Image (cartoon, rainbow, N blue to C red):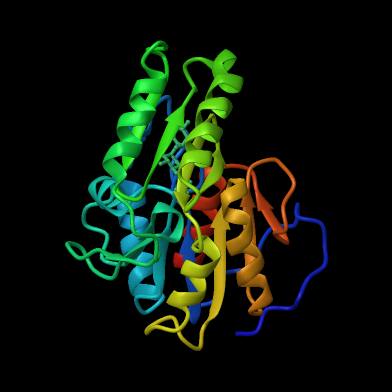
Length: 251
Ligand SMILES: O=P(O)(O)OC[C@H]1O[C@H](O[C@H]2O[C@H](CO)[C@@H](O)[C@H](O)[C@H]2O)[C@H](O)[C@@H](O)[C@@H]1O
């Protein structure tokens, strides 16, 4: 199916999901509601069943593209058969149990994690999330510490010029340069069963915007979940609305 190249404002409900589309889904704030901590997200059986049904309907062309590292996301989504791109496009898992690196930065994340822990130590409300290809510093429990977190992460970025700052929801991350959710989507579109299909991407955060633009540049469409400026041509209010839209394609 060829989707019209819409220029309409992004409060327009997306068209039905075609069975021959390639479906790319963000995780936090998109498939699951934002939770107080990264490990507190709730993955329901209904979500697992929905993704399994979509995987069958789309001929396997369903992938998760997340800022989480692959091992963490596979842990939350055990049973999901599809491809997972993690760490903002720095990692790829074509099947459960297999993870490959997509970035070209040669570095040891251990000292980075140690430096983040040392910097955050005076403020127990801050949460350091260690990732194999970077680090996130969360301030959801201490919004007043945002400026402190910005300063700490900028300092770490200055000391690790191969990494780039990635703002997130109530967090600041460092990830390898040269990759992103857009490059992950573009790479997947070269692989079976995605190649030759029209991409559809749904996401909620600024980190998703490049992948939204990539999907639309390829003749597909993007869905912004929630409020905020976006390049997406369509918008749904929250993960529940996305679930309803996905379920409509299964009926
Ligand atoms: O690309 P995503 O799948 O949306 O992942 C983005 C980041 O999500 C996680 O952090 C966010 O969600 C947490 C759970 O709801 C929330 O507590 C936190 O404040 C948010 O920033 C995850 O921890 C990060 O690694 C992801 O990059």
